[in-house]
Structure formats: C-alpha cells, structure tokens
Amino acid sequence: MKRIVLTGFRGTGKTEIGKVLSSRLNAAFIDTDELIEKKTGRSIPDIFHYEGEERFRSIEREVMASLPQKDVIVSTGGGVVCNPKNMEYLRRNSTVILLVADIDTIEERLLKKPRPPLTGLPLHKEIAEMMDRRRQNYYASSDFCFDTTETSAVIAGEKIIELLNNGSSGQVQRNTAIAFFKSGRLPPVPLIKLTEILTGPERDPKTRIMGVAGFPCAHSRSPNLFNALFEYYQLNFHYTWFEDPELDEIMNIARGIDAKGLSVTIPFKKDVIEYLDEIDEHGAQKIGAVNTVVFACGTAIGYNTDWLGVRKPLVSMKGAKAVLLGAGGVAAGAAYALTDLDMDVTILNRTLENAKILAERFGCKSATWDEFDRIKPDLVVNATPLGMQPDTRNPLREDQLQKDMTVFDLVYTPPLTPLIEAARAKGCPTITGLEMFIEQAREQFYLFFGIDVPAEKVRELVQ
Image 1 (cartoon, one colour):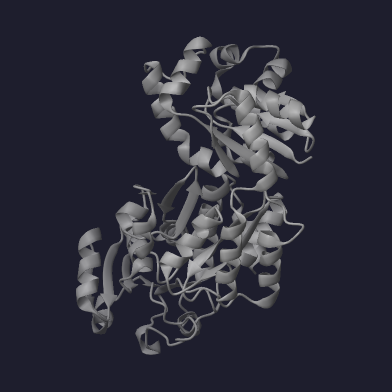
Image 2 (image 1 turned 60 degrees about the vertical axis):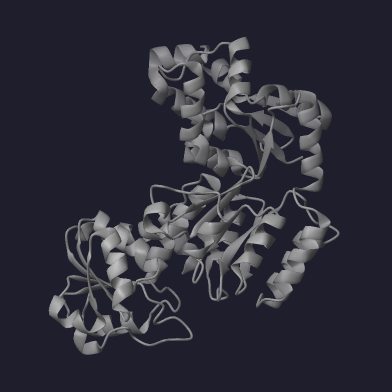
C-alpha cells in the first residue's frame, strides 16, 4: 500500500483518524511527534523550551527522512508543512491528505487536551493567526482535502477510504474532460495517456491532473518539465495542455476533474482573476495578473510568479535605467519586478495609452515605441509576444542595440529569439526567456507542492 500522510493544524483529528485508517487498511500507524519524543527522550514542549525551535525542526527533518515508504499511515505535526525538505520527504510516493476544521471546532478540541501555546495570543486568535500563516503551506501539502468539523474520527476515516478508492471527480466530469481535450490540439500520444488516466480501466483514482491554460499554449514546455519533476519526486500527478479560446470552458473542466492547479499563460493572465476566490496580495493583486492557480479545499487562489522569474536574474542590476517593451499581463509582472529593484523604468508600447496606464500603476515613465533611441537604457526587457511563433519579428531594429546594453527577452520559445540573436551579434549581455521560465516554474512548483526544486535541476530538465 502506498504511504498515506495526514497533514493539518493541531486539533483537526490527524491522530484519531490516522488510527482509524490504520485499523481499516491493516497498515502501521506512525505519529511523527511521538517519534521525535522517542528519539530525543524529551517531550516536544521540553525540546522547544530547552533547545529552541530550530533544534526541534532539525530533529523533525531527520524523522521525516527516516519514515517507511509504504504500508503505513503517518500523522504529522502541525508545522511540518512549512519546511520544503519535509515536504520533499513526505510527498515522495505518498498520498497526502490535508485535514481541516473551522476555528471554533479546533478551539473546542484543544481546550479538552491543552497544549503549550505557539504564541502569546489568546487561543482563538492564535489558531486563526497560525492557520492563516500556514495556509499556503497546508494547501501545497494536499493531494486531497477533508473537513473534519462535523464528523467523528470513524466516519471521517471511512469517507477518506472512499475518497482514496474513487477519487474526487465523477465519471461524467471525466468523460466531459476527455471530449474537451480531444477538441484541442493535444498531440496523439499525450491524449492517449490522459484518456487512460481519466477514464481507462486501470485508472488510479488518486492521480491528480494539472496543466497549462492558454490559447495558444501547445508550444509550452511546462508539461514536459512538470511531468519530469513528478517522476523525479515520485508524485502521483499528470500535467497537460488546457488549450481553448474560451477561458470559461477551461475553468469548468479544471474544476470538474478537481485539478490541483493551473499555470496560466497568454491571453488569460488578467481574465482568469474573475474566476478565482482569492488572489495573493503580495504579487498577483498588485500586478493585476495571475499566472498560477492553486485549487485546494474548494478554493481557487491566484498567484503571480512571473515577476520573480524576471527579478532573480536581474538582482545585480539594481538601480539601472530600464526600458520595458509591452504593456500586457506579462509586462505588468515585469514592471513590478523592475520597480522592486529600484530601477528607472520607462514603458514603451505601440498604444501609448496602455503604456501610460501601466506606468501610472507602478510609478514608471511611459513613451511611444519611437522614443527608444533617446532613452539610452542599461537594460531592455521584452515583455511582448514578438519573437514567439507565429510572429517571429524582432521588436527592435539591430541599430538600436548597443553593446553595453543588457537584453532580457521574456519569450522562451524559441530558446534563441531574433532579439537575443541580434543582441549577441552586437556583443550585448543577454538573458534568455529560459531563465525567467526556470525561476517562475520553481516558484510555481513550491506553491503547488511545497517543494523547493534546485534551479540546476529545472535547467537540466528543460535543456
């Protein structure tokens, strides 16, 4: 039997439900907090008091790494999900079930079994704050989510077994999804595999679907990358292309098959916001565009990782004079990244009004495309689709490029765009869209699974 891991805040029933699953499935039960106490000969409150949280987390990681790989039910501590290394250990070849409950129920349960406080706040406020602080990590930890608010451990255990046996989507929804994928441009071999996963006689109901949503998006390298990462980390997921001109159709299909998440590309990065329950205030909300959707516990949350993909390769150019080409969703993320690095940014766009609107949002300058030459930037960032099939034009003339000008093209297919080729011919330092793709994909993977993939691993898989 594949390992079953229970995550969630304390008081959500992990121990009790874990014991029920252990009995019903004839598998060993392990409580990781008990393992830590056995390993150290101390109670967890004592470890925190005498050795500190850092030491506790170190011991916790050692315990996570030592867990059996199969035929076991594992109940984890409430904070285990916050460490990427723990998530790598726990997610490997496992089914992870996030247990949730409302705050009042958790408070009532904890009052019956008092535990050392995590903060100096009253219990109700402490629960609310800690759950909010960890929520993204909890959602990333979940293959499936189960609400224990109004159920006993026995009933919860039975329903979880039913969920594991049948999956979280119905036959009608899966058949509808296959019809959708057949109507798109999914290549024959991936379509056959997807059909087997969703409706085949040997289908594993625990396999979850993810994908890239866009039109067009058949050029995207995300499916190859993510599926390779799933194999590397032994995650029971499959990533495909959700290509359709109607975003409404894509979102209906994704929700119908209980997709774990979507990477969102052109032209839906702004439009997708209206389909979401929440958007992350630290990036997506300020940028006004979403490239990552995480579905968890009935909620769809939007994030933007594009800006981090732009920012990380440019850290050494903080304070530079920059020209940003374009004023769409990708450009918004780039503008956020450049201004975060205190750059003097001018946004150029064929439609000046669009450049002005974006510039006002981020405190930048704006100008027409023809004014490029007078600006003399240290850095040029192309956030237009020019250079990507089918429009392979260079957004700049060759004579506009100077050898001391760094050129960053956010287009990553083809790997060497006309702009990058022309810039290299002039001796310009260049950054290809592959660098942005690598960094934003790493951030996406963390949001989806709580695992911090090394950049070198991503680069190895996409080369």
